[in-house]
Length: 370
Length: 208
Image (cartoon, rainbow over all chains, first blue to last red; front, side):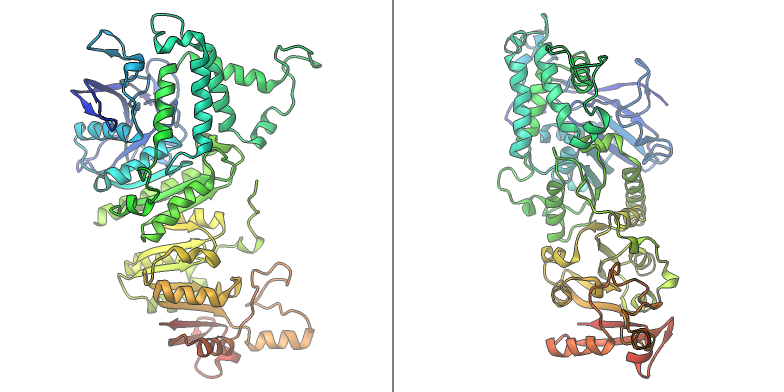
C-alpha cells in the first residue's frame, strides 16, 4: 500500500488561548475507501512525535507508517472495511502549521511568536478537516498516549460526531510526573545555546538539547524489564569497561542513536509547544469533575492500558472507566499484559488488535441497526 | 509484571449449550432491558442476550484473557473485581444484575447480593447446589473435600471459596429480607420440582 501525503488549507482557526491562527494547513493521509453513506470513517490521532504517516509505505521515503501493524487490509483497523484518516497535529513539524511554519505577517518562521496551543485546538483542527472531507459522523477516533487524549477530547467536544472512541495508554489529565518529564525535555532544549530563544531556523538547530530531551523521553517509554531484556549491562563494542566517558554500555549507545536520529526529523520548538499542550490537558478544565465532562456523552468507549506502562499508568485509565460506569456509559476496558512499558501500544499489538477489531465490528453493526 | 497468571480453572471456555442455567436466564430477561453480568467470562450469555433479546449489555470480569475475548465478541466488558466494582454504579442502573455460577467465588457474597439489589431492579443468581446427593455421598464415603462433576476442583485450586446449598440460600434470603420472586431448579438441563436440595445440580433465583 503506497500512500501519498495530502494537505488541507483553512483560512483561520480560533484557539483556546484566545489567539487566531491564519491561515492554517493540515497534512494528512487516508487509507481505504469512504463508503457511499460515509459511515465507515475512522480518525487516528498520533502520539507526541508521530505524524500523518500512520500506515502503508510512504511514496517519498519508502517507510512504513508508525501504526502500520494496526492499520491496513485485514488488520485491526481494517482498510478493506474502513476509511482511515490520520493528520499531523497542530503545532507539529511534519506538514501541519507549527512554530517552524512561515508567519505570513513577517515572512519568517513563527518560532516563539506561535501561539500556545492545546489538545482541544488540535481536535478542533481535526474536526475542520473531517468537515472538509464531507464526513458528518466518525465511526471511531483512536490513538495512544497523546493520541488517546485527543480521542477523549473528541468524545467530550463533539459527542454527536463520533460513535466510539478507543483511547489507549493515556490519561484524562496530565499528572505531576508527566509534566515533570516534559519540563526536563523543555529545559534540555532551552539550555542549549543553539536554541537562541527559538530563533534558530536560519542557523544551527539546538541538536544537543533536543537529543537529550529525546533520550529522557525514550527512557519513559520503556520499562525496567524491557530495558533489562534489550540491553542488560551489555557493553558496546568492548570487552571491558573503558574507564572513561566514551560509550560503555549498549543502552547508552541506543539512547544516543535515538537522540541523534530524532534531531533529523523533529523541530525543537514543536517539542516545546506540543509538550505544553499535553501538560495543559485536563478534560475537566481544572474542576476535577470528570462526571460533568462526560455527562452529555453517549459515545461507546474502549479503554486500553498496559500493565508495565509507568508513564501513563493503568490507574489513570481506570479513573476514566470508573466515571463512565458511574454515569452508566457504554465502556469496555482491558489492562493488557505487556513488558514493553508505554511503547506497548506501538509494538505489542496482538491482543490489542483482537479487542480493537471486535469492538469496531460491534460498533459498526450497532450503527447499522440504528 | 504485577499481573497474576490466569488461574488454571479459567482455561476451558463454556458454550451456551453446556450451561442450562443460561437458558433459564434467557427466559427470565425481558427484551430491551438493561443487563449487567457479574463475572461474565467471555461474554457468551451477554452476546446471546444482545442477539436474542436486544438488551443493553454490560459485563464485569476479572480474568484479562476472558475480558479480551468478551470485548472481541463485541460485548462491553470491563476488567475488574465484582467484590469492589459495583460501588460506582448508581441505584437501579440496571433492570437485571446477573451473577451466574459466581456467588460461591466472591469474597463477600452478602455484600455482593446487597449491591446487586441496589444497582439492579432485579437480581438473577445461579449457583451449583452443594446439597446435591452426589456431593453428600462423596463427602460421606471418602471423608474428603468433595470432588464431583459439579465441583470438579481440588480443594487447593478451586475458585469456590464458599459452599452453599439451595436451602442455605433460601435461609439467607429469608434472614436478610431478599424477596424471592421465582426459583428454578435444574438437574442437567431438566427442571426439578421435588426435593430440589437433594436432586438439583443448579439453582437459579430471581430476586427483586
